[in-house]
Length: 115
Length: 115
Image 1 (cartoon, chains in turn purple, green):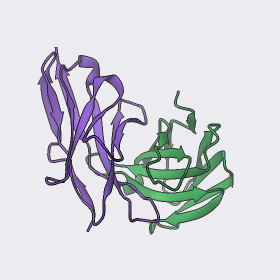
Image 2 (cartoon, helix red, strand yellow):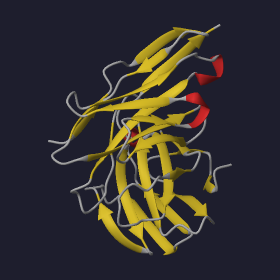
Image 3 (cartoon, chains in turn orange, brown):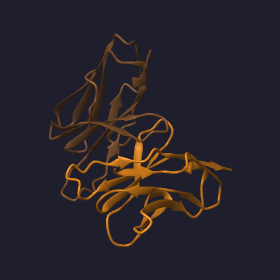
Image 4 (cartoon, chains in turn orange, purple):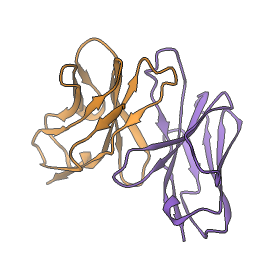
C-alpha cells in the first residue's frame, strides 16, 4: 500500500538552531514529493517540491529538502529556525504511475520554535 | 489571501440541520477538491472535480453532497451529519497537466462542529 510517514508528531527547536522535519514514503513507482505548511487558522501553503534532477530542492522561506531514493525519504530542513516557522508541516507524495495523480499525505508534524 | 475563498469560516450545526460550504477561486484553475482535515491524521480526499465533472468520490457518505456549477465554484452540501464529521473542511484548486507535478492552492478552511 502506498503511504507517507511523518514519524514525529511534534518537533521542538530553539530559535537559531537548524531544524529537520522527517518524511519517508512508500509508493510503487517514482514519486513527485511535496512539502506544505499550515499556519494557525490558515489553509495549507506550498513550500517546495521534488520532480527530478538535483536531490536538494530549495523552497520558500529558506526551507530546503533532500530527496534520498535509497532511503525513500524527503526530509525538510532549514539551517536557522525562526519563531515564525512554528506551524504544522505536511509531506505528500504522488506516484508518477498513478493516472489519477492523487496525493498521498502524511499526518503532519507540528514544529515549535522556542525563542 | 491565496486566491481560494471559503465561506463560512466557522459553522456549528445540529445533526438534523442542512447547511452548505462554499468555495470560490478566480485563479483560472480547472480542478477543485474537497478535503477533510482531522487532528493528527492525513488529509482525507473527499471529492475532485475537473472541468466541472466529478472525477473522484472517495467513498464519502451520502450525507455529504458536492456541487460544482462551474470551474470557479464548489459547494459541499451537508445534511444529517454526525458528531464525528466535525473537522476542518479544506477546498483546494489547481491546474491539471500531464506531468502530475501540479501544486494545490488551498483555502483557509471551514471549521465545522456538529452537535
